[in-house]
Length: 396
Image 1 (cartoon, rainbow, N blue to C red):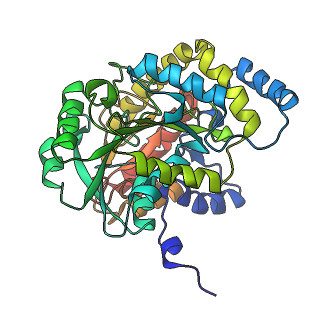
Image 2: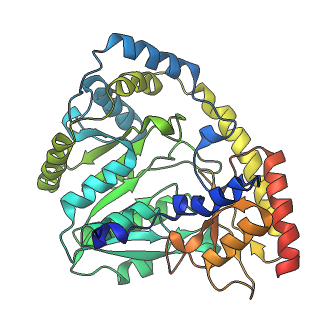
């Protein structure tokens, strides 16, 4: 029996590259994994007060289904957080809680995209935006981000790619996979374009408090009249990736997103609810001071500086210094490899380091690159880059 074309066409490079790495590990090879953005796989731990809150929640709640839109108290805490952080005028009815931001992306796409519709996403971009658009019959279009300008969006290119079929514009800031932090000037130009062409915006802000130089500003703060859906969650800043909790906020003063919101809420009811005890416990993460964040950012900044220095010392590799998150997007050069996957598999087989092919984030603007995390400590990072350097000196 055959699977559907829509499912067989799904590609998710971040996890797909794990399959050949597992084969090496079966042979006893120690693979250094720099492929996945999971801080908890390294030396970052979920704060104890949040872990304790989950234990208490399991005892306190009835462990039954939650409301489809999300726990009322949690949604109220999200409203408070977003009003303070992004200065948005929203109510509890404007917030939904999902199984990670990925479910938000899936549901928004399902509600907004008809076959033939187009979306605009940054190139390179987090793969789920493109994959879900294709899954529902849409056409994902990537707008250029400029590597030499720390991967800032190219506004002229963005304007050229807006068509009558364009439904919405995606902003991923801070950016995965490049670690870019968009300037206020660029964000304002993007919101101006959205207003000019009557588009709504999806603003992915899951790394919003994880910046090294500068401060994150939401496009919702800079433009009050553009309909937007802000997507955020608890995986990164709060070190809760395995809890699979995210949320979306509808900032929609004129009701332009009302039908799309209804389509999303119908899907929420269809899938019943997100995890009930985790929703109760994560309220503590929102209300408690983020004491862990300062130390986390200090460690990450130090590792970022080390990783960028080492990458730029390796023949055939170069990288722009990321300003946020924990990703870098180096460029590779050499005649030995024809594709990003060839490069990544060669590094895996010969240097025993796992990274992600750049064209998995955009076949146009990601090509000739790879994504790596700098989450491990410097001893592990140093080993990884020494092994890559030894191979590159032979290969280039």
